Length: 344
Image 1: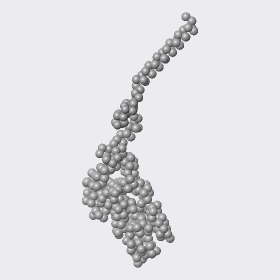
Image 2: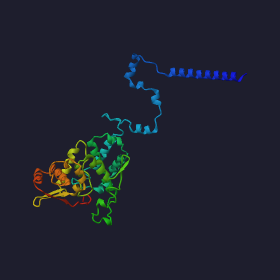
Image 3: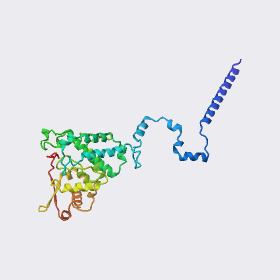
Image 4: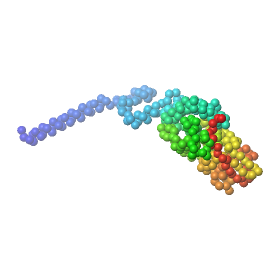
């Protein structure tokens, strides 16, 4: 047999095998392909969308990165507000349940003083709230309205500062902090920027929550009077939870109550002096970026003083407002009382 004849037979056999494989594949595809539906056959499928799902979509493997997302986005049982795809939105309701037990008149007096010894013994709700804040899904917060987010972060800040005090109670004074009262939060090392709280899987300190997540973002200086400093001279800790549907009224009330207190505001008409809490000075930037800095009144004043006076005029009695408007008053600051806001 010649070499050319052998090569010819080999090529012929190879072509025959290729044609056979092609014919088999075409036959298998024809058997698996869905039959074309008539309008009458398609109608029942339209009535039942579940019937239109293909086996290939159900059985297709899901990457691990997508499995975690799908797991966290499972529908929440009992959600009747159309938010069933928001992961763990029920956690917000549970969190507010804990806050109702924490910001309770039995633990927090009307003047903002706290029963820290009692709270330390009965801190189960405080610990549960901290644990829930840590595992809360970020998508839940993203789904909230502006008022809901502000209320969330105010309550979260005040929860964290209560936990900070309880974790260090009774506070041990440091000899090098002799200028502060013995039970002051200032004796806790790094209280504002070195102690971190786990929230939604990230770590935040009190300074970041106050400035980055609230004051700088929402530009509302009323929030300054809702955030506790755990000190007698600071904002009065409210004995109830901040609620989004009542937030505007709650913030207004916080400002007015604080300005009526001796550590908040005093007006000396004889000396033409306004005494303000150091809360105004410590949060000067929050006033400068607010709407009160752009009001066309007190324009001969420095920008910070103009913002402070415009803010005061929105919350003081009319008699004081008229006096400030007509009198070139001097602004002085009241010494800040860093004594722990503990019930005697």
